[in-house]
Length: 248
Image 1 (cartoon, rainbow, N blue to C red):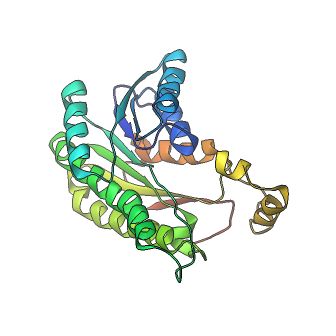
Image 2 (tube, helix red, strand yellow):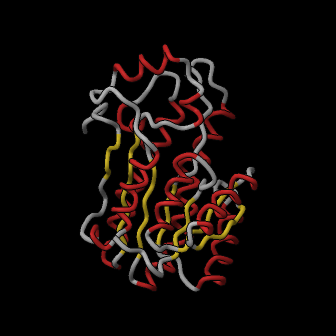
């Protein structure tokens, strides 16, 4: 797979799964726009890692939940590069809590970032991609969006909404040479899972048929396939990267 000459925007690209996606796409030849909100040091480190490996990257700060910021940022990216070929909606947050005690602010924050944020970015790239008659949009959803999870009603709702958004936009844009798909990770080794106790980690593994956590590169590889020419006839689909934890 080669992505030479392609311009890729990855939201939340400064660490974890987002960073792995940035590195993977850059390694395949794409110029990667690394988006961040509040961690410029981490975003710059991702961009530097790409450049040190001989790739091309730039850092753009904008809050995906703010439509004005998104429109302004994508207008600047288009001015700087002339096109946007790939959008990876990766940025997301959690505000966990049981539904009986969940505050409205926690619900709104998660829906605004995880669902509305993806909507804002897809809307911003849809017209440029339609003019190009080529584009790849991939959204990172979650096993939780398919299976649900106690204490994560807001997160599950946002990720389930992202599934419906992906399938609807796939139908709208298919005739213009644009594919729209999703990747649904299960439990992936990141800073968040590394902070869990050994007991909790073993309990999680016991619920996964492959008895192990996934790696960020497992997710990045799935994204890379979906944005490649090899996946030109794949749209409205989801790749589950979860070790068999959920089979849908």
